Length: 207
Image 1 (spheres, rainbow, N blue to C red):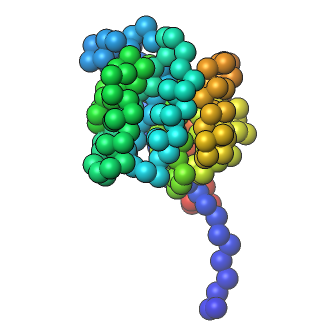
Image 2: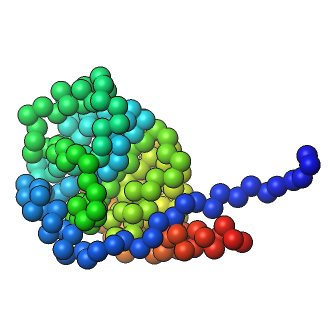
Image 3: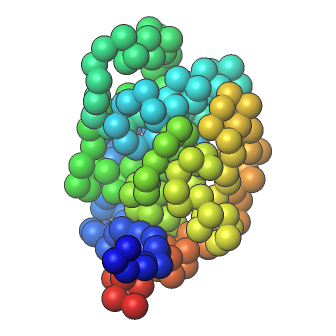
């Protein structure tokens, strides 16, 4: 009362990725040359307890294989015991885990373009803008079913989805290590264009 409404989730959407692929990757590797010959799994976002980084880091260290690096990029949202605990766990492991700090502009896009895959192990995520950004440059995504874009990713075959607990994160990591995402790159951009581009999200909102 006084009216009835049919609820529809239209999504936020992002625009086309800016800049040039090769130039952005070159800038990223100039800043982080130790990553150039590594197989990198990228986390890009806030350092916050809800992001599931503790599970990701423990799983990565427990299952580490030579030649792999977990890249953690983003601002520190809560510089308290949570972050301190993560830093202590990764002390002296600079080859296995690289903390880049906040990345923006071409450096951010260079990281997304250079990564073997993006990971988002969140316990809750309304949209997951970084997922759309990764897909827009052809980078497959590994995420939990608490990220609200997981259905679009699964339907398009543009990534891998699991639960947001220890078992689920372990499965995501092992699927990445065994290259379950091989062949998924070709599905990433079409998934972005059809479901996550701001142009189409605006059309759905108008409809």
